[in-house]
Amino acid sequence: MLQRAKRLQSDFDGFCSQCDQDHFVLNQEEWGQIEYLLCITQPFLKFTTLLSKTKDNVYSTLHGMSVTTVEVY
View 1 (cartoon, one colour):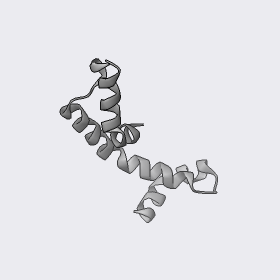
View 2: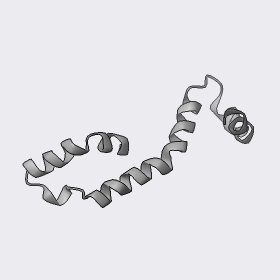
View 3: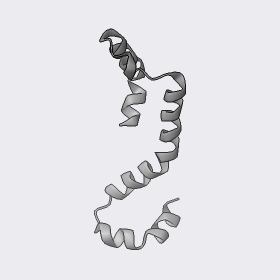
């Protein structure tokens, strides 16, 4: 959701201004916080995407997570 918001930043700001919803417009500091959150959550996104591609039983994959994590990265 944050990735989509960041990608559509200019459209979001334009829409808020056009529809007199100025209280929803984010300033540069707030957009920076979104960018920061995206950087923090990037490893989790990669891991869950990798995990969702497996055809094995998810429980057995999670049970050996420490071994899997070391081998993948």
